[in-house]
Length: 245
Image 1 (cartoon, helix red, strand yellow):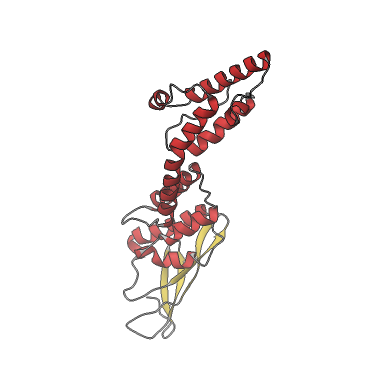
Image 2: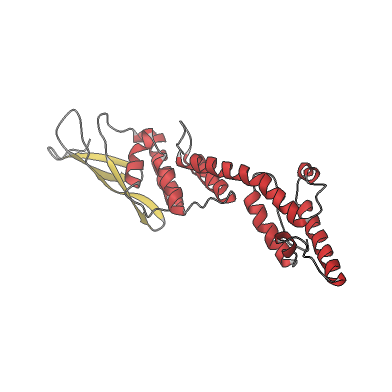
């Protein structure tokens, strides 16, 4: 197609295929034969020109079909009828897939033992699938559903990220990795019966723990404060005795 690239119609990419095919045929000045049947009363010259455009459009469309699809539509030699048949064949399937992809994103949840990179990659993959089916997913929506899908040991991070709606998916991934690393570190075991709200801030393109508040110990009523000791490590200072634990 003279450097005009149109993907092969696979049955799962009809929306993208149709957009690119229409653009390609428009550049070739062939789009008119896709939108209307052959006009009546054409002069011999105009009729020959229309037939040539129709033949070229049919050829371009069929060249972008898979072998199975090309056989399915082999008998059709009218560009408009061919276009309409392809549309009716795949539009219903595309709408179903669009609904399924949207539901898949809305019901996204992290799997047990799934790594941060894998989870975010899966979320991005679903969003890409939605886009290919014509379902727009904004960056904010992607972050929203990705964060909402965190659970179990990441529930605390999920609740905090819900209050930080300006985060991008890349920033969420960085925060997620930090938390994942803290769980996997031998020195990161948290005291039994304690919980902390962790707030993150962006600084010099790196995330760090900014403040840790509300340390609660179920065995006592004393409140403590996590103080940064080194990257990813903290010690607890008791307000009662001022001792480091």
